[in-house]
Every structure is written in structure tokens, then in C-alpha cells.
Length: 190
Figure 1 (spheres, one colour):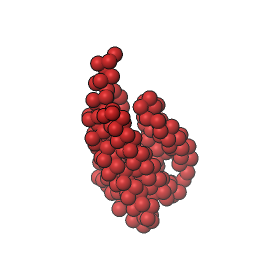
Figure 2: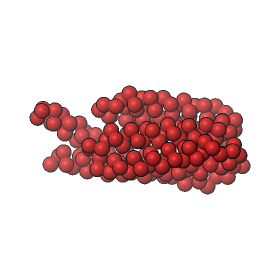
Figure 3: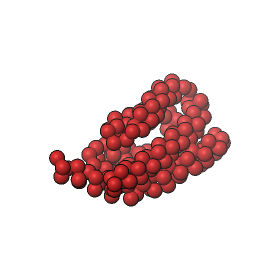
């Protein structure tokens, strides 16, 4: 048991050296959210491109986590693939896919919500703020079902607003993770 504890401490110490990556990506997500929330529906192509980039970035971030995380790697891989595919589709034809993404927006938000809820429960033993991810996931479930019941025209506006909110929540949780990871590194060093 002691050897396993030592391995976990070493792994946590190594991961904590990269705490600033979560901080950087969190800040980037917040900036993206502020940019998205400034757009109007008249710039649909731009919004489609930004949303495609958001999905690609989320997918790449999940792939990075897949290599860094111990356990649950398959979950990071699945969501990484889903986000990368969504990003590629969005970038292939931004005008056409904004309407399509608006139409399936509720489903996409539900996928994000499920991921955040699973991640919250998976990290609750090592993350004292796991409940924040759980609350964000539950809020995303509510948003997913509400969005799914809207008309398409309303969904385009909703796509803008909630893509901005999603990016903002993602950024805030990444910033919190950064400081939690840094704290874990200090605890394992001591």
C-alpha cells in the first residue's frame, strides 16, 4: 500500500508542474467566451468558425488529459474524438453548420453536461471543489433540455449565448483546477 501511495504522490507532483497550463487554457476560454458574447447573428460564418475552433480546442485539451490522467483515459479519448469531429464539421461549412449545430445544440450541451458530471464524481476524492463541476454539469443538463425545446431561429441566438456561457464555465473550472493542481503539488512535496 505504501508503494502505491508513493507512486500517486510522485504522479501528483509531476502533474502539478503543469498547473500553469490549466490556468492558461482557463484564461483563453474566458477570452473566447467574451468574444463570442459580443457577436450578433449577422456574423454567422465567424460564429461557426469560432465554435469550430472551440470544439477543436476542447478536443485537444481532452486528448492531453487522456495522456496525463491515470484511469478514465477512455472517457477523455471518447470526448476528445467527439469534440474534434464537431470542430471539423463546423469549420468545413460554418454558415450551414451554425444552423445544424443550433438544431442539435441541446444534444451537444447534454454531452458536455454528462462529461462534467462524470468528471466531478471521478475526481471527488482528490478535488475538494468537485461539487462545482457537478453543479456546472447539472446546470448544463437544464440548459440542454431547455435549448432542445426552442425554435430554430431562437436556437441560433441561444447558440451564441450558451456557447459563450459554456466557454466561460469551462474557463472558470480550468482556472480553479489550475490552483487545485498547484495546491496538490505543494502538499505532495511536503
